[in-house]
Image 1: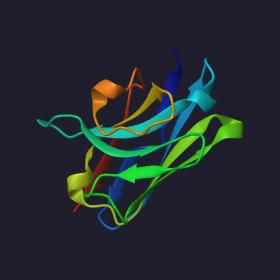
Image 2: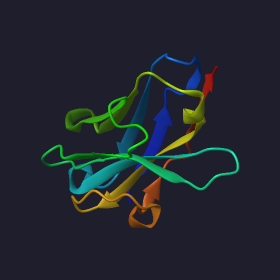
Image 3: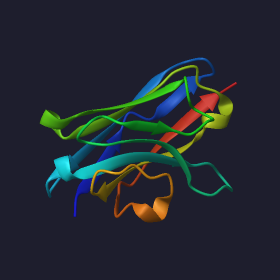
Length: 124
């Protein structure tokens, strides 16, 4: 089991940028694939991006492709989500998640461990 803590959320105007961070501890984080998900008010949790720990293979939702970038720093046990050209529809609580093994997945059930989330609000 790995513990996850997100940070970096906040209020930003449309077109702005934010960087979310996820600090991981416990377990052997190099054995985990990491993902970002989000949940907007009244909607289901949805996949945003994921990254393998071993070869940096990444996967993105179509809605964020070209605007968001996921990366990780193995030495610091952190994963990041760089969000550019933010839109009001990006407003949501963003969650970091970890799954054992290296394969990236887009569905929440594939992930065992979750952070508590960080709020991102994009004003128009």
